[in-house]
Image (cartoon, rainbow, N blue to C red; front, side):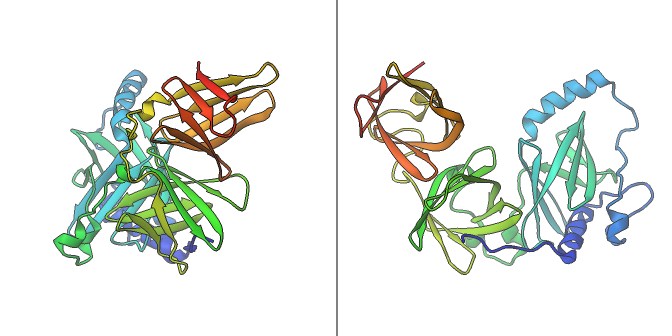
Length: 338
């Protein structure tokens, strides 16, 4: 309902190969992106450094590099730009002026060598002096992004985003045709959607740049535009999402309570049943208990002194008094922090 599927065609695969060859990442054999897709997908990029580090050096350099790897990296030349977003669980998102939409791929790090794989094409780069260097020794990816507006003919006023990616983190809600959809955008690049008409959650990935939100959900690419504090889908339905709790700061409610006050494990018991709720800083809550099978995952948020826990689109509200979480429906249902 909420998405317009972008089909993966041979043209898309060719476009991705063009993007990866745009930065002139080629091996000593002189292969380029102009070769056939089958040949280009076999590209193996030579290392900038001829010396081979020991396993210990690989582990030490990889550990420190992994900490600063997450986020956007960019490369730009006279032909265009490439933006790559590195997500902590091994996913990567690439966007470029050569693509009509972003593409989801994978990354891995071995020592100082970063391997990116998109649509069967593999590119290897080496970290050196704060940048990733391709096999030609000239093309580099630096931390940050290149604005797509620079290559789309937009004015300077149009090119600057009015909101940062970090400010989008949180829960966005939309009601369409009687159904309510909650979209949770997490800081680690993961998205989760729940629907009032069905059970379960739908997980995906997301990235945001220059007022354009891109979601990757169940093999589909969904794009939304940020306008006037709303996210509007680019699909025919023109769905409008508004952020929950947007009238207050993300860290502190009007009552003065901090979201960090809620982080952690809370417990309730009445002698017959025991229930635990574990609240995390990405807006997720995990619920377990003596009468609950497995772990139930939901969303939570703090508004004033009210904590709303939503599971499968059904909200339940608790009052926070600085020490306990008390159900507004049943004051005997009281959770304490363990």
